[in-house]
Image (cartoon, rainbow, N blue to C red; front, side, top):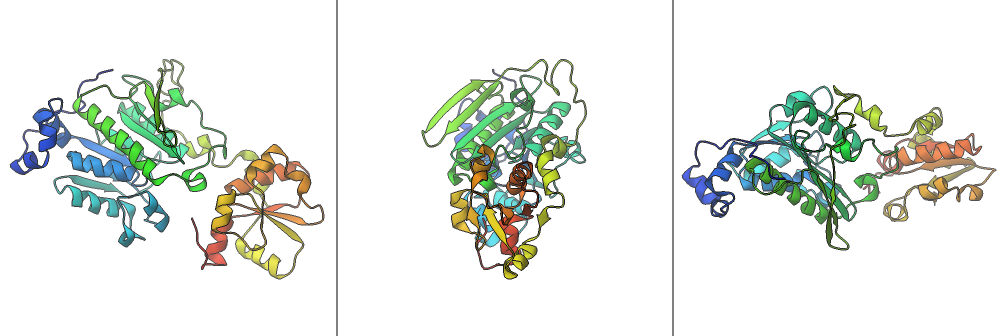
Length: 392
């Protein structure tokens, strides 16, 4: 559907701005009026990571007058494969500051506002209220539902994107004119069901594909041109090089934007999404050891069987000495249980401890009462025991 422009045009463009944006100005659908609207727009990017990187760079290049950046993390070497707004010299720096410097390098006429804090229920309303449009580049469900609910309560549109391995999705959610994120996904998936990019990986250039779609949609909403992805979900398969669309209808029973909403204020989104299931939390209680404890057990010759529940490609990057690879899926299907030794204590680990806690719950219910898992996983092991090994 066509929608009216989100923002009013600025009073004027300077001579330098006319030169800079001339290729926009000669597009009839954008023109002087559209560029003035971009200049007057205030857009907030949630995250300066995989999707936030191309989004911020193209928003800046397009001439969006004010860009806000919500980001609390620091640049890590593993980010550089896809987070192109950062460079080698930025490793260890604040992502927000690194992103700001890159934006200023692209377009010095952009006003950049930093929010170097973790977005949560205590600050999201105050931060979002300062902007016309939100661009969501988050990679966890708790923040996605937080962003959605805040935007619905504030009646603000936002452009959403999601990436995983070779697949991407994008849409525009605006409850005044169409569905919200909860209309599409009323409930988060069960804990551990959908791996994060940190667990499953992502093709770096996929970020550019989806990030550029997000910026295209942002420009359309801000200037009122074309038909934004309101009520439509764009799905991209990079391996097959295919785009397809799915219609998304407004759910009259939606918990937050429906006719009789049950969510009328922000909630505890970590609890709502549950990083780890209740069963895993119960199993891990009293059955979690540290990497240093595992090292002591190995050195003392304890009778243990170390099981790595990650995937084969992760195991090839780095592993704990003596660990045997049995991916989590084999435990969930039950095929791995018959091969476990009965005369040794089972010690599980994964990358950080989330997947191993889920597998621990399976083992406990199968009668392996003394099984434990390593809190912090192989990342904790490398940091505390073998710092010369790589992490990912």
